Image (tube, rainbow, N blue to C red):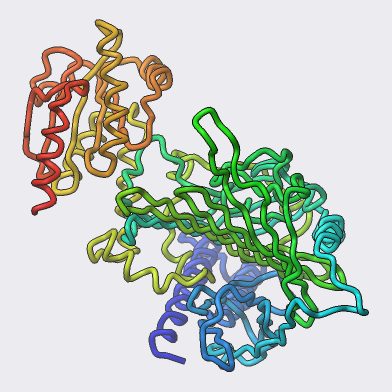
Length: 598
């Protein structure tokens, strides 16, 4: 075992021991406080003390038996890493997944055995913790599509239809709780923009008894832990923080569109079941999964365009592969690609068996958006199963939390240290440089939380939060401030707000637009924000009220008034041009050029 790995394990164990020791002392002091200290000689009191000793050593011995295994899975013949292999603790529903480099981490206890399975490889059960650190899988034989079974060609359409009819048999149709690790990061021209990770619970009321048409239908969601890096996407008021629905819908066994209409390439689930006649299926071969023979069935959507008044429009093109066991007709893996003129989305789902039922253990979705000038944005979403639990005692109610609700989840560094997660490497070093300029991820999580607290709910302590944000922006952001209040003097003032939203779309991540309201009534202010849709992504709203210090500091005599601050925090224009003035963009471009030179 490497030295740094030993230190990592020991730090987790020492933390657990310290917690237990403190609990033990609290129990003793509760029994033997200053007033009752002489009574400790009482027989009953001594019995209680002994019980505390027994409990302490019993629990602490369990804590010391747990430790983190870090390993790597490779192809035995080629030495290449094997991504997205299933690593499960034998006899439990606890597990993890290897990352793109074949690496994994898993919290185990005692003499635990693990089972490693992966499509196209022979499964392997490992009993020694030392052997878990470097796992070599042997490739299973794969047959080509020319294979015939009992002299009769395989009919891919019938195989897929039968697999669909067997979903309720092969997948759990009873309520269950599944605990996941969630990761979402995005890049702009290969530079990381943000990283969000979370511990997520999903409760399915009816399991896989029926296919859901969207996320949240007869299922509950909650986020128990969260960590986020610094963010350069302008993620402020109005932007959805988590994409749980998008990644869960990569599970095409559990989510299918109810209509055969053309799909939204990013938002909607597959329509493979409902638009079955419009797909062409091919038998692409036979492989192996966990000792079972598996059919590989390819599919492609037949439709490619639709006639509009402006001419033919290319519809999202869909193709993929389904991996189906030959005996039970269970889906063990699915792959799908959707693309149009500028967007491409790759999705995949991996399933493993617990008892006699299959559950998704890894969901993956990656997308890319390309522009005419060769720029591109991309995102990566994944969801890894950590544990599955059954029983009504696990039931809860919840939904995907919004940004305010996520702020109530404190960042717990020890949780992330002591729990098995999909390893961040090789992400970590690049994210530290791209997002934090060398600031550690741990420090970034704390800084981002502080940032979020000051750009959320601008109606509460608005001036205090604005002052913090203004100071934090020094050296980071160009600010365009709009001081306003209701009622508006003219319709043209209302139009200026619409121009701000347009400019925000043009200069997002270059200019930060801040709206500062003099309204004293918070309810009226929030109603106006909703009415004029001023929660647009990238715009920050604060209610500072009449007579605010900010109004005096910026010499505001009427509304609306606009102020432009350079990236270094200095005043560029105390009476800046209105958003509708075309010359404003000239000032914007000048400040952007100046900031990029520094």
